[in-house]
Amino acid sequence: MSDKIVKFIDVSMPTWPCNFRCHYCYVGQHLSDAERNTIMPFKYTPIEFAKLITKRRLGGTCVFNLCAYGETLLLPINIEYAKQILNAGHFVGIVSNMTITKNINELLKLPKEQLSRLFFKCSFHYLELKRRNLLDVFVDNVNNAWRSGASITVEITPSDELEPYIDEIKDFSMKHFGALPHITVARNELVHGYTRLTKHTDKEYIKIWSVFNSDLFNLKNATWGRKIKQFCYAGKWAYSFDLSNGKCYTCSHRKLVGDFGHGKHLPQQPVCYHCPAEHCFNSHAWLAWGTCPDIFKDITYANVRDRIRTDGTHWLHKRVYNAFSQKLCDNNRRYSKFIEWLYKYI
Ligand code: SF4
Ligand code: SF4
Image (cartoon, rainbow, N blue to C red; front, side, top):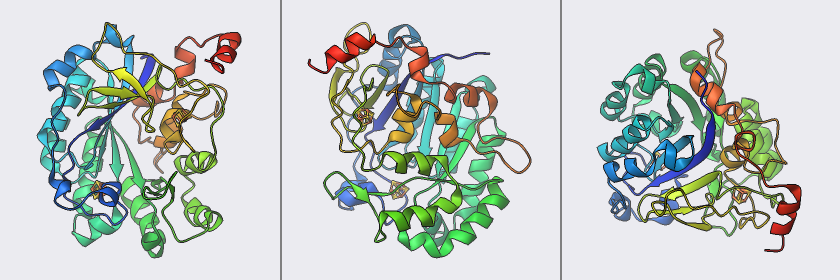
């Protein structure tokens, strides 16, 4: 079966509650504890949303990434949107701390064909899992998801507090997930432009966390602090969609493109040469998917998500692996060099 992926759509779900309190949490950097119990209104119900995401309207098969602000899958409403996306024939990635077993199992009851398009980004909050005695729950849910036919990736948010546990985490991951976790880069969102959340120098930080040999970590570091000057098709091939206000933006840097639900097709306004960000801190998604066709040609989203276990099996099952190995720049028509050049001046 071949699935041609034409768009990557990152969906922010306006539910803040979370059963964890990780010390590096971005939500916690901005909100008080009381605010973190908030659920904002959704612009579209799951049924209304379903009408907006037909393959005809979106131009083909898409990969959606669903992330609630409190990244837990704590609320059943989050699951309803995932089901609608799968019903429409797209792929879904869900960001979760994999501890709300009841809701995860609700998804794992879906037909096998739908599970073959489902992917969990399993946030491995080691210290918080340990503190709450939930490591077993996490392991069971991650491995049950994979055994049920969904794909998984296990990702650590590095922090200075976690450093003494690096060897322990490596052993634990090899034992339970057959491979080392991927590593992201934690950011301090209270600093303009965002910096790495650490007391270490950049060089020290990279050295410490490189022991996990993670392509996710490598790509993020390759773009950290670096202004992207190449032509970027975010806003045309990839979007960040806010379910609370119905607006879609170019990417995590939220340059407005338009209303998600307006018109026959999604609004299109590629960012072109005018990247609004000081650095592309979510390059592992946008740039790996190929929104900037001239850079990172050899890396795909599969590279930053998959691992091969010691027994030869992959975290990404075949269908998701094939989908995530594609580049949007190969599946969409690019402007001519001349038109791209003209956009410099528009
Ligand atoms: S699980 Fe995610 S959302 Fe919840 S506290 Fe930890 S980092 Fe924050
Ligand atoms: S380079 Fe990254 S940050 Fe800049 S517009 Fe493209 S996706 Fe957004």
